[in-house]
Length: 190
Image (cartoon, rainbow, N blue to C red):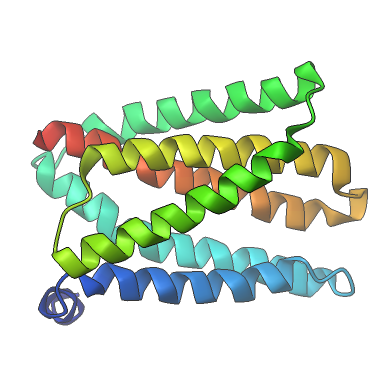
């Protein structure tokens, strides 16, 4: 772990950009497998690959939380998990009980994602820590993604696409969790 950690530090602000690009590449491969309607085994392999990718991304975050809380990560992780769960449940209830067509959110998600990527690139180039405001903006973006994806699964997915639906919801849920943890961690540092 020390070798990887020192290598990432030597790359400066570009380290997380490189990690993020590698993660996106892995996510694309995992999503392609999970969406494969011809092979149930490929679908589960894609979901499994994505779970492993998320574990690899979360390990350094949880380690950082543990360092910042002097070995008591539950101070941040428990409230962050509670807030994330409440958001996901609330957003899912909104989709299932309002009957609103959330397809209009796709444009906001695309624009928000492009802006977020641009911000990450600028932060990397300038060596700036994005901070809690960026985490808050990403929480709003991910809440929008969860609304849209839950609506899409409810209205568009067929019953044999349950693995792909699980992939979609899991990816949005853990990304939201990442930013909620980052927000709580950032608030602790402020």
